[in-house]
Picture (cartoon, rainbow, N blue to C red):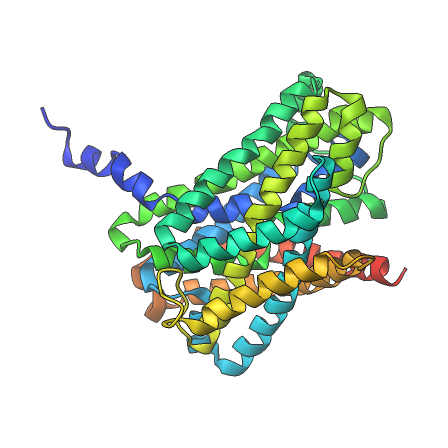
Length: 418
């Protein structure tokens, strides 16, 4: 007997689900890049399990923001930058994209620095790994189709499982982990607040909304398959949080319990060796290398998508170089300068990343505001605009993220001029 019509509508068509799968998971997982892993590592090493509880509400905020961008891409068939230009004009879009270009370039530098640091820990030469990585990500986008690039990215997501494995190798006190996850703890000293804001800032980044919406548009997901795209976004938010969770647990169980403080993921990987098995250190470093390489592919793509959409240029991996020259030229320059500058001896990458974080902090609440205005526009979204409950939660999330972003800007500027 066939199930009722209502049941048939609710049943998941797994063929469609796996066909739609990609933009949400890839965008979320790239958020665990060199900067993200460093932030979570420092949180665990310097504060133990104190921030485990915070990952749950941050995850919900991430899913909420990404779902709105995802929905706009499916409904309108246009990227976020294109919608902002059409609705708010070229001048506002220009300054917004310029700020995003600067902060994304700082992040690209961080990814190539992550490739250099992790390769050295693994006994490889950074002078070989950084250029090789740059050539690989360039060829993949320029020579491959969107489907090929997406499959490579989805495969790269599997490497994040290394952090989960490392979590079990660290043998934490799972009772304490569960307690600190369930019971929020607060502190109002400057270092604690700075770390909380840093976790929020590294988990919800401005480039993510632009990239996911552009990916959905290029994938040409029809409105009839929107719910599968929504599942993709939700799964991405959950999985990226699980990985972050285990990074904190690993560094808490090993580094924090032994009084070892660190600032970067590379320092964490090196410090793990004498405190756990050599395998844990190697797995942590491999995870950092794959994450940095993964993000070094996505961030230039996200930037190229955003700039070209804002200026009305063709932007698509499925287009040939002659059909989208500005897109591929910008992508090439970001990789070339990112890898080149990261290899300059004595370059102060830390200051560059601090500046990019300041711009990130200012941009994020502004972009969320634009998203809320667009997703509630009847002409743009029709029946797919936000409902009152979603709007209420979104506005509260925007205000909290905005406050956190402003605090992050203040702390970062203090660090920059210290």
